[in-house]
Length: 284
Image (tube, rainbow, N blue to C red; front, side, top):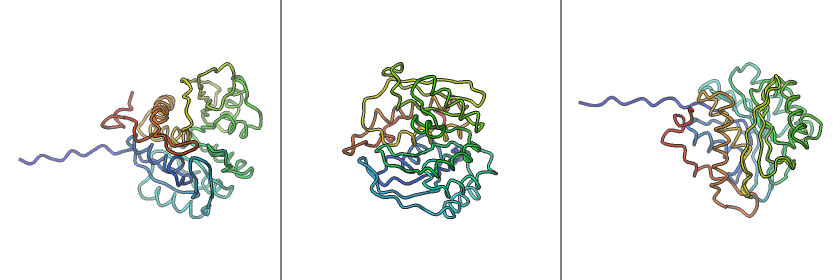
């Protein structure tokens, strides 16, 4: 007697709006790897194509705001999405177009406000950063590192108190959660620990910390973390659990970096063990 095929559970659909990294370490390439490794279905709306590697960014070609919107429409109007992750936008026009398109979308939106590449190359000018304000109004979570947080809030963040105050102000101003990532912290109180602070619009905070990993292979950490949070929210995780599990995945990818490149090399997404079903393995 023939056995009836078991229909697999549907993976969460994640639309990533970001730039392409030719070397595969960050951007759309890191996003796709992360979403796939964590059991999601990745779709993309590419905002820019970059020529870059572990040493730096050698060139950037921007796509038009109209074409970025067309890509978003192609995905949402047919397949749909359970979560959206936004990374590099590259221009004020693209930021405005994305905000216009997502204004009527009610699902989870994770925004990694990319301004500077790991190598130090600028990926957003002042006008583009100004355009982030309207986009943050639509977001579930914004994930700035400390230099990005300082730029968004317009004040220095050089101590644990100032980091919390800036994140709380940003969260209240835009009615979204803010994950202030502490990897760039020079605060002596942090020592050899990296502390990330998840701040709610009402000002409550939850801290996550880990031992600082001594490695130069950090290309794509922000992309990986934000995409991991997006797909985990798509799996139905609560926001704080999604952040905790996404940090675990990102740390594992850092620890399993293949050692490629002469500069800030890529992480090892493919080496992270998430079990036979990543979606089922991230339900605790």
